[in-house]
Length: 122
Image 1 (tube, rainbow, N blue to C red):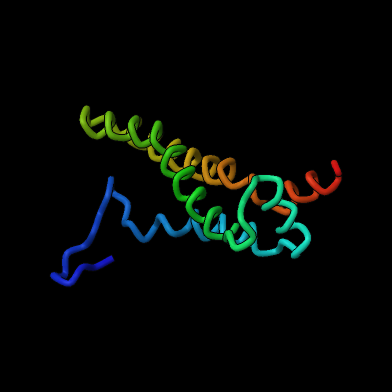
Image 2 (cartoon, rainbow, N blue to C red; image 1 turned 135 degrees about the horizontal axis):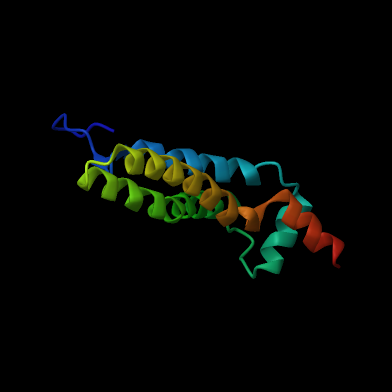
């Protein structure tokens, strides 16, 4: 993302725009819910009728990705500090895998599978 002064906003070597990817992934996981499934999820979790499951899942996806990627990013940072390319590579791969896993686990709450589980238990 480029600011008004033309500077790029960078956080931890990753552009802030990249954070939208896990959020979008999470949002689309809720997009195929039927009205009945969405209503069941809202009732089960005690949410108001006008709550947006897509936006809630979007935020959870971003946070899950950030938290999941932290250990790998820490290893990568240690590798950069010690000039160890093996640690940098391993940390980068672990950070990526952790981010994907974190986004997936954080967004399981508002999915079609969870709705079917809730509807099936009634």
